[in-house]
Image (cartoon, rainbow, N blue to C red):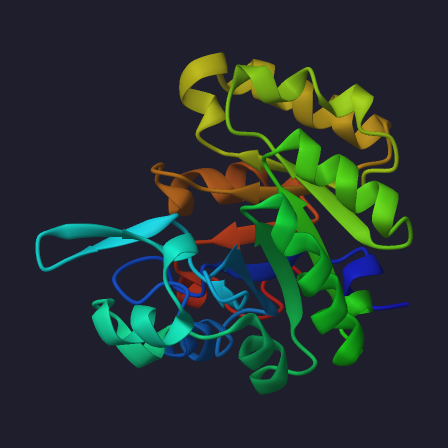
Length: 236
């Protein structure tokens, strides 16, 4: 049994530490001083490299550059974060033994991501998630033994949950409090629990220090923008 299968709530750093250095090695290192693992975003470059990056592109020198149209070398030369942007391979090499939530932003990032986790024997420590039902379906089909999560990003997401057979986890934003209300959110969380699904709570723009403690009894993992206020084992 891995830490992910225990009854304890574990902590993941959202993009490492969400903010100016998010999805970089320094952010991941800092997060792991306090958290059990890290959540990071996965995208493909134009030359087929997997990198940790949330948006499809970036702005530099007054222009917007798409990652899919650039090589990794070009991205590192022009991107404001430069060499701090890691490949996904580097993430798994640097932080062996951590818990990972790899958020796939593109369906064609799936195959190379699966190969990398297999190469580093990290499949047992990794949840592959996406907000895109097509990506989740592809993951469930291609790797039925993988832990696959579906991220809720609005009302429309919820209707997909019953259709995604074999899900391991549902990643629920605490921001849902603001548009469905606290009681309705509790109903959703209880329903997911009854279906045997793991619940990963994450934050978009709410006060996580206020809401995570109120909702943690329903959670298996908390994805925190800044895990330093909780620390490893706090909920264990």
